[in-house]
Length: 403
Ligand SMILES: *[C@@H]1O[C@H](CO)[C@@H](O)[C@H](O)[C@H]1NC(C)=O
Ligand SMILES: *[C@@H]1O[C@H](CO)[C@@H](O)[C@H](O)[C@H]1NC(C)=O
Image (cartoon, rainbow, N blue to C red; front, side, top):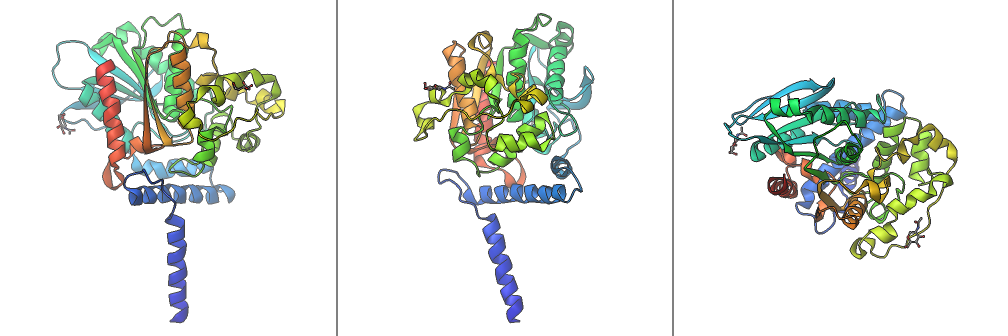
């Protein structure tokens, strides 16, 4: 009996220890966030074990687990939903059903998941895009771009870019009853990265006549040059995106070769030949004082030239939109950026805001002090969070006023 009790006590203590993570004081519903965070951590550990045992690649385990969250395209009274292909890339389309005289707005949406995970048909994304379509009376194209580890950069970018180019043709816009002056790109996390990269590339593409009206970047990843920004230092283990997972996602975007991941984890992956790029992510100049806090800027540390030769993607602005010069930011459309205080990617977004404003782009910067990475995807079921709904409503309000 004594042994059983002891086992029970030790197991409970272990579970409590495992689940318990200090949640920042200003985060609402801390217990729910703690359980959400522990579930993500547990899935990560499971994936790690399977990977170490050589049974499955880390990201494949997570993909398999995430597939439980899939919903088939289902129309409702407001929106017709269908899976189809644009320019040979899978997309999920949301077409408003309400009768409407004029031309509609459109949102090209790119989901998050570190370029490795996620899809338009995940319950939370399906819900967000369906509501976007319903509330804005807009055509929404949610892109199922191909993912790592099977496909690496630039496939993800090229998929969303070719869908965007296809959709922006005047014949296609008119087929869907879309106003060419009211189209935007939007995305969260890795999807925000893709949206920012697409908006930049369109400026240089003489084949595309239609201009974007806006870009909406929800806690976007915008660079992997410096993975030791103040936000990385402060939020290394915050829900639901740790620094180590961020490094995994970034390196996996370019290659499954673990040497890039290891170098990125040490922030020693950029060779000295590319030192000039650090001016574009110099947080000493680009962050406001309230985000710099007490952090002291140190000069970059450099790595061997081999990685950059083998995997030049991490120096490519199509993967890291912060790495372009000011000239290439001019001409970008009206911009919405959401950053969360408790997010490793916070400073990427904040630096982009600073750089865009410096060249005269109108930017709305929503900084959520009480939120963490991915908060907007918790808008359904038992994991629904008030902060997620609030951030989503804010984003929709902005689109409604500006698109
Ligand atoms: C349809 O739209 C109305 C008004 O926005 C909303 O109240 C209703 O819940 C929507 N129906 C579905 C199935 O989402
Ligand atoms: C970053 O900015 C600081 C302050 O302006 C400056 O001293 C430093 O040389 C810059 N570093 C790089 C790599 O641009």
